[in-house]
Amino acid sequence: MGIPQPAFYIFKCEQSAPPGMPKPSCVTPQTQDLFQHLAQSLMKEGIIGTVQPIRSACMNRCSSGPVMLVEPGHTMYVGLTKEKIDRIIAEHIIGGNVVEEYVINSELWDAPISPAEMKKQMGR
Ligand code: FES
Image 1 (cartoon, helix red, strand yellow):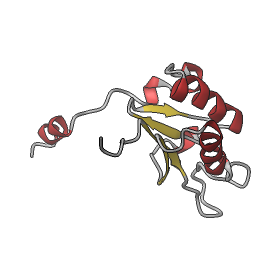
Image 2 (image 1 turned 90 degrees about the vertical axis):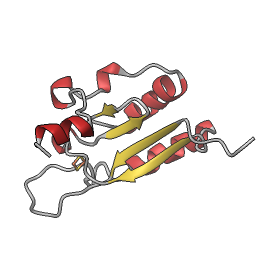
Image 3 (image 1 turned 180 degrees about the vertical axis):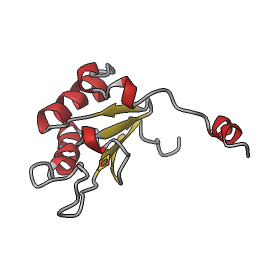
Image 4 (image 1 turned 90 degrees about the horizontal axis):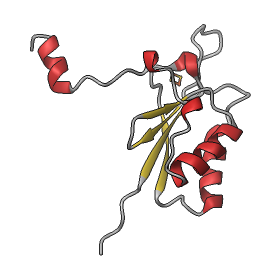
């Protein structure tokens, strides 16, 4: 048997806007330890090997931050706190049920456009 691939990747946006920038961002002094909390909670549960937390750059949903994306599934969680992260791990990552109340509004996260379709729309 080979080395098992992770069951989940969790992309936690780690972008912080430079001081004075009007753009909201996912990392502020109040939220800067969320990635560490995510990694520690996965470790505490003993599932860090099969769930891979990844520090990501901006995913263009800054006004809903702090955000993180769970793959597979394209599930975008917004407005994160430590408590919400723990519930997502328990109910979604371990339990298999998406925590709908923390998922981004579908108007801000509609169905994806395939790259082939996008090329067609661009006339290329
Ligand atoms: S700063 Fe996190 S989505 Fe843009």
